[in-house]
Figure 1 (cartoon, rainbow, N blue to C red):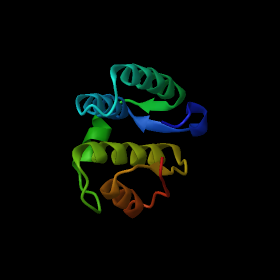
Figure 2 (figure 1 turned 60 degrees about the vertical axis):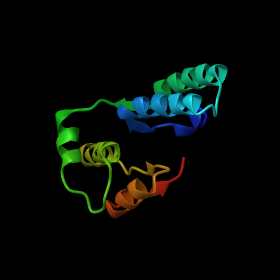
Figure 3 (figure 1 turned 120 degrees about the vertical axis):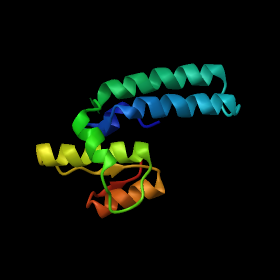
Figure 4 (figure 1 turned 180 degrees about the vertical axis):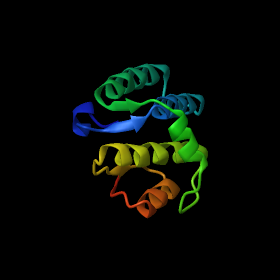
Length: 118
């Protein structure tokens, strides 16, 4: 997991907290990490989330996420993309999109976001 200070000015949808927790718990169930690693990574993720802007889910984000996108995205990806689109529309900020997900990367690119990999 990147150091928190490496993402100055970063923000993410609140669903990232759920995604990180589920991924870490999946890793422990698959015996890819042990309990000590889980505890350490959960603590680190809490610090990391405290260092970035967490955008709460809103009706506007959910409505936008339910609408069409230029490419196929799953439900969580649609929430992340809708969050970034609304952020960009409301703030005028030039937003770079960070994701490991191939489909989400393609959708973000189609929405004219510069792409970075975490």
